[in-house]
Amino acid sequence: MSAAEERQFEASVYEYLVLEKTYPRTEVQLQAAIARGAEGRSYRADVAVLDSRRSEIIALIEVKGSREHKALRNAIAQLLQYRRVLGKAHVPLYLFFPSLPGSGRRFDIAQVLPDGDTKEVFPNEFPTYDALIAGDRSGGKAARVANARAAIDTFQLTCILLSLVVVALFALDVSGVLQLTVKQLALAGVAGALLVLPFAAKLKMLGVEFERHVPKEPPVEP
Image 1 (cartoon, rainbow, N blue to C red):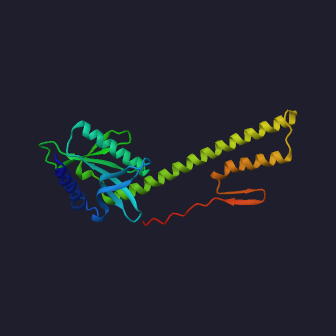
Image 2 (cartoon, rainbow, N blue to C red; image 1 turned 135 degrees about the horizontal axis):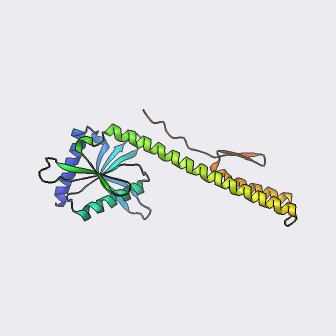
Image 3 (cartoon, rainbow, N blue to C red; image 1 turned 90 degrees about the vertical axis):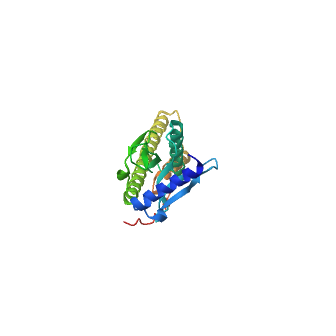
């Protein structure tokens, strides 16, 4: 399939999303700019489904004119790379490619799974636009919860390690191996507080209260 034929194939996928699945025209973008990676390289997906109200990409699609194994594996690798650049592990990835002769379908669809494998998706099973929005919101919420839990686990581990250090210092001081002055204890307390501060919303230290600034997210429309 030539480059011109691939562009025509992309247009047919666009028509399927807009006319058959009733996606808003303004929310389906062809040759969509994703972002720039750490190495400065820019990335473009064949098709991106957007939620403009939240300035989010909620699905990525690669359109391939060949079912040849190497071409499909390259397309899967591209989609997984796009998702890494986006930093959204939950964004769904899809492949559109020509259907097999005699199938009666315009194209075949496959969803790219997290492990890089694929799962066939029939055209009537492809998610609606509202379903993609709902999935993106729930996926984003799950990611925030997972990040919060990871921060709590790190905070608990930090506190345990600090308490063990304090116990060890106290034991050394009692046994006479190490003589700690008030100034040294104060400095140790400050160092411990600085370790804890990134995980705490508020911390009072030496009569001064520190509060970590957390930017407020704009309200999400129902």
